[in-house]
Length: 267
Image (tube, rainbow, N blue to C red; front, side, top):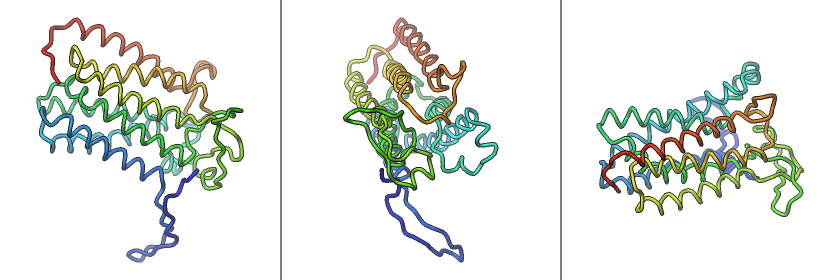
C-alpha cells in the first residue's frame, strides 16, 4: 500500500551519507504508542500519578520491542541465523511483546506498590488501541499479509518496496488480515471501556482483553499468508495459535478464579 510516508532521499549528517525514509509503519507505531499512553494516563489519573504512567509506558515500549523481536527470532531461527540484519526491519511477533510488557508491568507495579490487577485493568484498553493503530501500519507496509482470496474486500499490493522489505506477494488479491485484526482491536477497545464502569472485580478488564484478542487471533491466523511466523504440529497450527489457545485457557481460569475472590470494587 503505502510503506513510505516520506522519502527524503540522500541525506548528509555529521559526515555520514544515508537514504532517509519515514516509514508509515514506524509513524503509526509511534502514534499508537502515544495515543495509548494518553488514554492510560487519563483513565489512571485517579489512581496513580501521570508521571508513573509515562515511566511505565517507556519501560513497556522497550520491553515490548525486545520481546517481539526475540519471539520472532525464536520461531524463525533458520532465516535470521543466515540473515540477522533482516531482523532489524522485521516488525516482530505481538505475543512476544505482550508477554514481555506484562512481565515488565508486574515488576513495575510491585516496585511502586500498585495493585497489579487494578493497573492492568487501566492499561488493557490502551493496549487494544495501540495495537489497532499498529496493525494499520502493518497494512501500509504489507507485512502480516493474508492468503489469496477472491472476495470483494480483498486487497492487492503493488509496491515493489513492500515486496523488498516484507516479502508480500504483488498483484495478488489477498485477505486484508491486518485490517481484520485492527477492527477486532478497535472493537475490543470499545468493549473494554464499556465494561470498565460495570466490572465486578479487579482483573476482569485485562483478562477479558486477553480472552477476546487471543480467540480472535486464533481465527485470523487461518487467513494469514506469511510463513515466517512459525508453525508446529507439522504445520497444523501456527506458533501464535498455540499461544492463543494457552492464553484463552489462562483467561478463562483467571476470570473464574478472580470472580470468586473477595475484592473491593474499583474504577
